Length: 583
Image 1: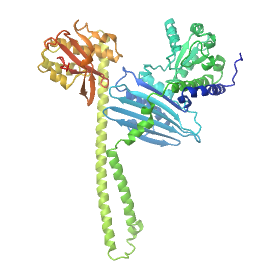
Image 2 (image 1 turned 180 degrees about the horizontal axis):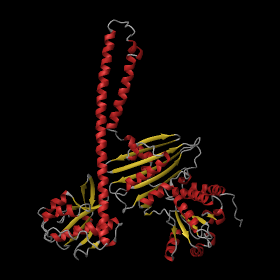
Image 3 (image 1 turned 90 degrees about the vertical axis):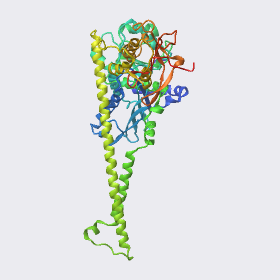
Image 4 (image 1 turned 30 degrees about the horizontal axis):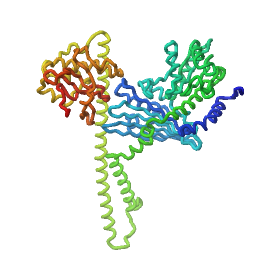
């Protein structure tokens, strides 16, 4: 066996490892060769606030503003499309808004070196009925690419994850190092480390037996985790846990004595140790050692992320969104642009009709043809009339655009205020419940069907809504137990909604003993149907039911509903009778 080769620097080690992997990587997947591009994406968790997408945009603009020192145009702060150029850098934002989606994308291009060109983009896409999705891409378009990982905005990703709960590949996103301090946690780590389905790289740091400065080590681990945010997960092993790791995978594949190791996906106890690089504590003790190790791990993690696919880059990438935005009609803005260009052209024509010197001296060149002066004067008058009309039209268009902008600002402000009030109400309600109280205890249940709609609008506002079809179903309803139906609606507004906001719970399905032993919450199955809510078609696939052995409308209760992610509330589409279907 040949002795292991020693390297003079991390850069030399990285170059050798890239050469060793390049041929096999190209045969395995053509995407691995695309090292000039880094793409990661995340989903906003269900328990996030409704304003999560807007907050993501604000965080991205804060990150951008640090480089421009708040010199961005006002349109940027309002979340509108804009473009800005300064020195060797430029930025552009586009936005597509419709009843079905709200997609905002920002791209920053830097051309600092000769032949260098790196584009960094952030996308925030909200689709109706789905949680917001965030995409981050770095594309090195340089003549000699190689700086994509160096430009990766790991700090921006970590900042977003610090304010908004995120999911990555369906699992909770972690931006801080994870300390394994229990046997149960160690068993879970070992299972995930050797899981063949693992697609996220692991960076593992070990604690030395005699750590001189734990605060310094903690800062290094945190910096490593923030540098790998979105690319890899960082774990920290105490001394006793490093022995457990050595016993499981063998000492050559373990990490201990304060060293760091990068574990690629597909790792097991028979893996090649050189494919999972180890950085020993002596290297980390050198000046700049942790930073060089972080850079090396970033490059390795970026290659692994590309090997496992690019997700929705083709649809959420900046180029695709900008192309769709450019193809969309511009409406009033396009009219204003056309009018402005027409006025400029007419101004140039008028200037040619009569020069400034002629205007001052009052003299003009004589007409070579009799009568031509009157025709020129008539043409000049016609141009002035046209210019006046175009100016008036432009002023009217500007006023309409200003009124539209003001109305939109008022609507956005009202929406933000409503969201803040709703959040405050939920916080106060949760506080009352945590103190053992019941904020809904003083609200009496309706006694007749003609009271149910008003009771729902007043007592369950923001939690349960009734469609027009459901309201019509209350007129002339034959079900006898109005109180039971009201208790079911109250359960949807409280226990069911709270469970959905926490990510779902098994006790939300099946028998609802808190209401009645004969009441169940179940999928509609073959009785599912569609309805129109807020301008879009929705599938009603759940219902609360009782009286399973009868269809007598006087004893059979059915409350058909669906969950609306946009308003984080329950929407009742039909009640209280069983729907008539073909079956």
